Image: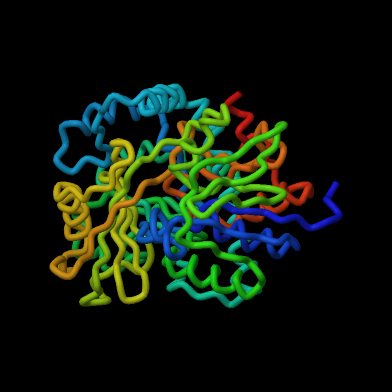
Length: 422
């Protein structure tokens, strides 16, 4: 049953998840404040991600065969997974839990959950575009997962099975058809054996989207409290009574945790052990020199797990998963991997003008985000989206607004909640 009175809701975090959450909560009639330590929206993980809005290309990192692949990747020059171990109990615990999800049965369950949420987000984003006219260098031309080896093509059968089971459109392509979809691949035809196209996927600049939506939310009454550092959540009697910040206590009727990789740090003193850990990703943003030699949409280089996406007059090259804790350094070896992937498939780009970036993706061991209630009656979680925060943002936020409002969600959500880790 929905609650009759609007509430004061504080959203912690002004990335794409926090801003979309604030938007849908305000549309539901609540009085919303967003708190973030940065001077504006989308200045951390949402700033320069790969640009994919991947409703169909949506898979857990924990998959059958990943442990053996990870061992092989340790010796690759351009590895998609980089492990920099340290004495860190949270890192070890997260890795063990991830390994337990690397079975066919768990992969099928986790992928189905992710596809359900992603497809719901596709509809929510389409509605949002219709309602607001928001623009963010968007394109609706699909994702082409590109296979360089027959083994990769054969391994895609499990993804095809999951897509078919959930009614997600797809096409298995030979090299010639890949080039019809992405004509600039003609120069690299001898390097590809086929591809998997998910035509409902989209692309867009997450930073532009989040800033545009934040401006619209502010016009609709959302208060953005930037430059305010969050120190701890104050709890009493099974409820959160406030958020202690460097500028005093912020109170509300309900609180939504949308702080990505930093969510577990604030939750731990409350006795909530959230298995979300930062997995660092990297990106290059390259100005387009020759449009005819650039991708039309997103090409996912399966060998290196790197996405090459067209964003207006730029190409965004993003990928890799580095498990190294809360570090945000820019390693030149990672830049070389990004450059290798894009120049190998789309030669001729101006690497000298490329900008290099890294961000901390909040990953769960099973790949599925954590959305829903907590043991504290007025504290909700919307975090742990990993590489798919941009993809799942609108659906997650609309789901969160329904849960906070006491409405029955439009999709099944119980298996997305924190309770699945109990």
